[in-house]
Length: 331
Image 1 (cartoon, rainbow, N blue to C red):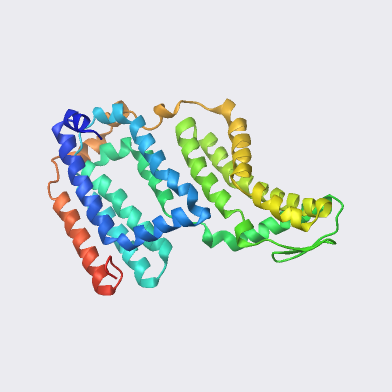
Image 2 (image 1 turned 90 degrees about the vertical axis):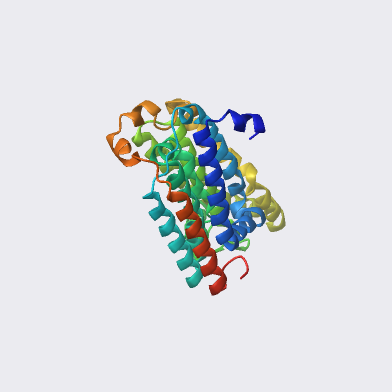
């Protein structure tokens, strides 16, 4: 944000955003190891390369809500501190037990909770989609790789037999007359599925109004990549039978890349396009709808000035806990 744009903001927004930036920086410092681990996974592990686009998408979603945000005034919400405390507890539990998924989710959740606590429920409601979309900063999917390997193997064998080629499957091993194929972890399709779920959430809440259509698109975003990955594995087997195993290995590497992903995404979006109900900038609750909410009116009351120092105290305690336990930035 440029200096001119910053000065153009109302004083209430400048103060709230400055406090939020300091609080987020403190929370990220306390969980620096987790943020470092996640950044490493986003950059170096191809399963999570798509997460590099998540911050860009969040910024885009926030920009779509700027007009609505201009009609709201940020007011700290003291009960939001309980969300930050719960997230930090999850972070601590994850670090103690060595379960990275919990620790990473807690680190991200603490930042989400800080937004709600320092900007208030009304602003959080206006930013519900970008705030919720931050969940996809957490690398997940490794937990379902074994199941995806088995499903991929079963689909590939069924299609191979349907093609008239005898095939036997045992776990993730597929035996055909030409060679023994293995559905490796890299071929499980988890990269494809994780990216498609994130895309499914984005499209569902920006282009659809009815929950029935959102549910249908999300279901397709889960089922289609799983089936498509099985088809990809079957295609590799067929290429091996036609052109040889060595050619099939190179073919599989190319097809399994983003070209294959882009084609499936294009087909899925093309099928859904006629059913889109709104433009992305129209997503979310309107200021008028939120203004009619009695719950929001009751929840705001006076500004909770204690929220900011309390958040800094939470971050300090978390950093101290991490340092003492050997899990913090200096651990």
